[in-house]
Image (spheres, helix red, strand yellow):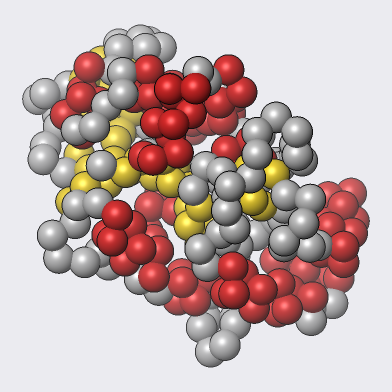
Amino acid sequence: MRIVISPAKTMVEDTDSFAVTALPRFLPRTRRLLEALRALPADRLQKLWQCSDKLAELNLRRLEQMDLERHLTPALLAYEGIQYRYMAPGVFTDTQLAYVEEHLRILSGFYGLLRPFDGVTPYRLEMQARLSVDGARDLYAFWGSSIVDALGEETDCLLDLASREYGRCLDHRPAGLRVIRCVFGQRVGGKIVEKATPCKMARGEMVRYLAEHSAVRPEEAQGFDRMGFRFSQEESGSDCYVFLKEDV
């Protein structure tokens, strides 16, 4: 089993806490994306990034100075979103770190697919960004099935904790690869609704839960009972695990 999660927009540098053990698998393709980004004028980049002037200035400096092979941060520590704060990898035990090294994978618009201790540098490039490269109309087309094919070489089952934006990368999966999407929702007006912040929190907590229990089968995720969420047998199916919070 492999657990797949999304990255976060906010990134930090931490070259001291844990050692980088490898470079990302698709680094040659990342270099091509870097070339394409550097060829764009500043106004086009800001539109692509959909960010403020201040953030655009920061990311322009990063783009100019970017080195894909030196002064790198392990991917697990490089992202600073809600999901990662609730996962809290900085306080994992050695056993839990070994677990995520084997079982956790991070999807990325810039790097494609990351293992926890692959070395990365801060970047800004969401998977949904409409960057045309080498005849591909956007990043979904650029990466194609390469990400999910690589995952299929590692396992026959994916536990999908990614956002919808990144989960689309798993759509065209190879035969024999099972994908189980996890939904963290609440009943609102008779429907199950996923709210962004609680979902991000729960995804991080789920990774921590699986690491603490050294889970190797997807069914073990059904025992998750944190933040008020409980597994719903009634709402779940073979390819979708639904965790519900009581009505509020």
